[in-house]
Structure formats: C-alpha cells, structure tokens
Amino acid sequence: MRGYHPPSDLTEGAQPMKTQYYTASSLDGFIATEDHSLEWLFPLGDINDTGYPQFIQGVGALAMGASTYEWMLRHVPTWPYTQPAWVFSHRELAGMAGAEIRFVRGDVRPVHEAMKRAAGEKNIWLVGGGDLVGQFHDAGLLDEIIVQVGSVTLGAGQPLLPRRIVSPSLRLSEAKFVGPGFAELSYSVATAKPNA
Image 1 (cartoon, one colour):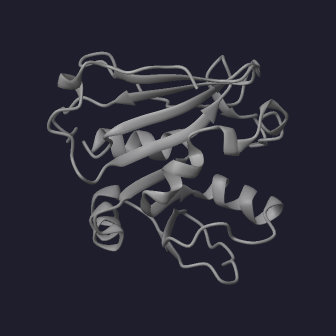
Image 2 (image 1 turned 45 degrees about the vertical axis):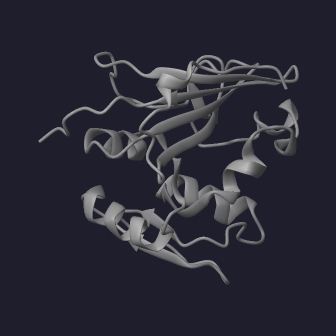
C-alpha cells in the first residue's frame, strides 16, 4: 500500500498503550445508516486488505455502545473477540455465549481505568458509536482515531464523531490507499484538558 508517513517528531513521546477509535465511515461522515445498519460497508473491500489484522493484534480490551453491540447480536453468529469487552448501555442487554463482556453505564473514566488494567501493555479499542467515543474524548482519554473512509455517501445516519474538535485540531499521522473502496487515515489526538 502507498502511504504518507509523517516526520519522526510527530511520533516522539508516543505512549506504549493507546486508546484508539478504529472505525469505517462513509465519505460524508457516517459510520452507520439511520437504523444502525452497516450493510453499506461490506461491498467496498476485504477487511484483510486494510490495517485491521495488524490493529486487532495490538488490542487488549475494547468498548462499544449498546447500538453497536445489538447490531452484533443480530448479525454476528459467534463473538469475534478474545479480548474482554465493556458495553455501555442504559438498559438490560442479553449476553453472548463465550464472550467476556461487562455491561456498564455512566462515567467513562473508571471504566477506562479497568480497561487499562485488563489490556496490560496492549491498546484499548473504542469500537463505537461516535457519541461514546466523544465521551472518552471529552474526558481526555482518546489518543488516536483511525478511520477507513469508504467511497460512498449515505446522506444521513450515525455520525463518525459528534464533537467539535477544532483547537487543538487532530494531526494526520498516516494515510493509506486501500484499493478503490477505502482510504485509511490515522490521526493523533492532541492532549487537552478534560472537560469538567
């Protein structure tokens, strides 16, 4: 794959463990349709051609919102992760056989501490949705955003990250061409004081 790699000073001081938002988005900034469907995504390419296989090897714990988890319950016959997972939800949800899942609600900060302990030296993956990731960002806990931008537009749906991140802005650290279906962009999130 062709890619842009930044000067080495952009990666100096990188933490051994990162909290990362890794996802796919339409060109107009939606991760799912209005009814939380991901069907638009699958015809665009093979996940094994992207950075995902390498990415998931570095993940020690993951978190997702209720809508993402419920989509998986409906569409994924076998839980695909060996890592412990935290699912944020305000309602009771069914578990999944063979999955190490903790259902939580409320402030993301104590959950993040538990995830760090479980992940060890590996990374934390925020699977989605965008508002949950925004809560981690607001708490100053988001280090990196990796987004596969698909070559489709949805017109409406679930937004990639419903936050205004302007100052400091994100810093593009890598860009990869992944065939005609995707561009994979990596951004570092500048350290800012958490919102009260």
